[in-house]
Image (tube, rainbow, N blue to C red; front, side, top):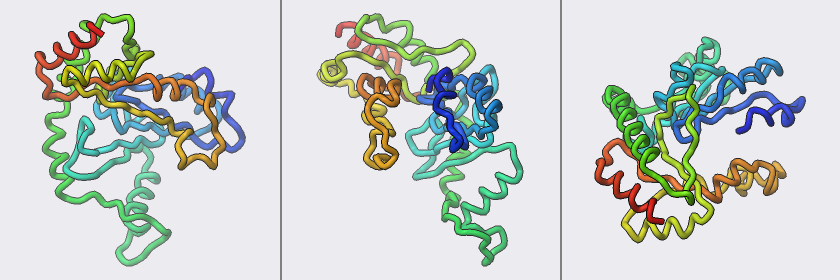
Length: 253
């Protein structure tokens, strides 16, 4: 999201801005916060991929009214099965969230509104409690791998994601862009390297949101990434030898 283009999209119907810490890289929170404060809007952080990421040396998740984290198994902090969490600094929001996740109930058998059944199980919580102790070391290893990629990849056909000095990514994904994605993907597959694709279709062009009336060209940054990006292997258990193989294979493309 380009902060310089947010204001031209704000209308009388705008209630909130959702900033996404995409791939584990914090968005420019201060730039967006100025717009939010000016227009008296809510700021929600999508931190699903950003457990432990820093914006100006402060962990993400506490800058807006709320932040949403995912504990899907593949995330930097993942549980056994499904799970997620919401952080907020506002007591009334916390109380309301506790009610909503429990069928709209705060007192057993009494329901103040229609809610949801979104109580995370004890096994999932126990797994997270154990894995949380290792989050910093896993994130540090991801940063080491990212550093190897950043220093080692030297191919004009490949563009790396920019990393602003005021952020510290946790590299949930390490995403590159290229003008010939299909051929690069085939090249990597030939060498037994299997990149991911996050994400091939932008949200506004999904069938589920067709009723909103968006068309190609409305969100050029998202559309460009959708058609040009590849996610390189990235997880804490990758060995240096495996990372070097990826780098060498990319450099001969």
